[in-house]
Image 1: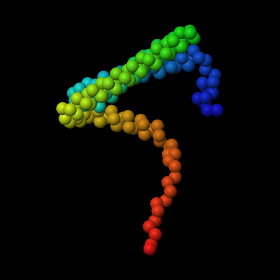
Image 2: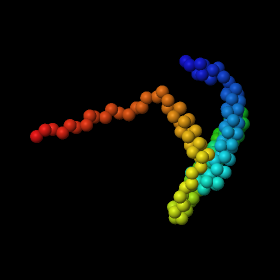
Image 3: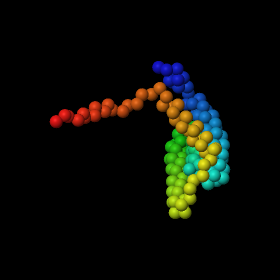
Image 4: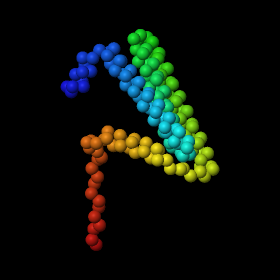
Length: 156
């Protein structure tokens, strides 16, 4: 057993809920700042991708707030299930609204033949996301199946 598994095994549900709340507060603050910066930079640059990225952060803030609400309802088991179901619906609606917004603005930009403008803040944000994704995969092996050798031409 790893140290983390041992700590989780000896933690009580209230301790884990408290820890989850702290993580959600941090997530809400971080994503609020990220979203605000991305939306403002996207509007200035005229970049739907950057505004969509900021709107995605808003969805993450909404999800974090909903999860915080869910964690606060954890004491009452009957209420826990009802809050869980409502939470899933709220987050689902947020994703549908994001998809509609990005689709509408993309179609509008295509019809008007608008070229995207560059944004240093957007480029920096994308680089940060790329780096965090790369860090998650660092040290892992790819599980691609072996490829058969290329057929060699036969002399006639």
